[in-house]
Amino acid sequence: MTPMLVQHHPHPASAPPATDAPRRARDWAEIQERMLVPLYEAVYEHLEVGTGTRLLGLGCGSGLALLMAATRGARVTGVDTDRARVELARERLLPDADPGPHGSPGGPRPEPRLLCGTPDTAADPGGSAYNLVTAFQPVGCTAGDSDGLVPALTAAVPTAERGSAVVLAGWGPPERCATTAVFRVAGRLAERLRGHGAWRPARRDDLEEVAARAGLRPDGSGRVSCPFGYADTDSAVRGLLSTGLFDAAVAACDQVTVEKEIAEALHPHVLPDGTVWMPNVFRYLVARIP
Image 1: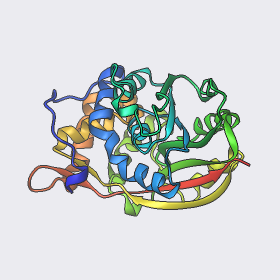
Image 2: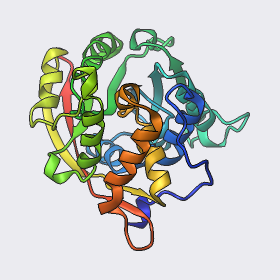
Image 3: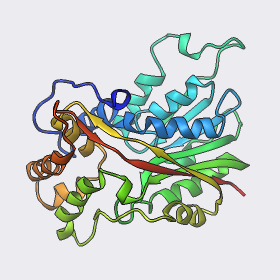
């Protein structure tokens, strides 16, 4: 359990509201984002990401996946519509006047590019096309959660070489994901919004459907164990709320109620030492640009 257990940070009892973007972005970066590290590692290993990789990360969040690719020698660009998360990514990948992380035996690497906006703004000004596009934000958890991904992929395709890999990520089978029970709470509370943000079980072909809608050709897939581990229930509540998957539930009732319901749903996953542990399986699809 140790590798994925999040270190406890002192914090208020209540998670930041959905309108407090900077605090929610910080919760994502400090608590939740690292839960997907096994997914990032598996994909990079599978595709042999290294010095020849020119990577475009869609929905790059606070940049952990980009940092891991850059550490392997990849040239990385990230784009996200969440300005608070992009600012945190800049803190991670662009340390002040410190050439060390960017140096290499063959000379300095180009600095990462981090953009707040849409994929069509991410074309490399140096003229080099990307040869890997990643969309690591998992789909298959709420109704319509892939609707925005298809146009993002469509906009990104012209910036990449033909034959380039495009990686999509999604939740595994509900019976293999302990966090499913917590997301059912979000769906139940959001019901009064007539299905907006309602939970639904992941389907086997979710990622293939997204790829087909974006005009991509599937070229392999894999499954990765990504357990969610938290130092305590408060950290778990804050981390889960930072995903945005409970926003519809908050809109349907109120923040305090949602926090209480999440905490109750977490009870079966609290260990004797107070930590929270939820085994999950995620799936990734490698598709190709025709």
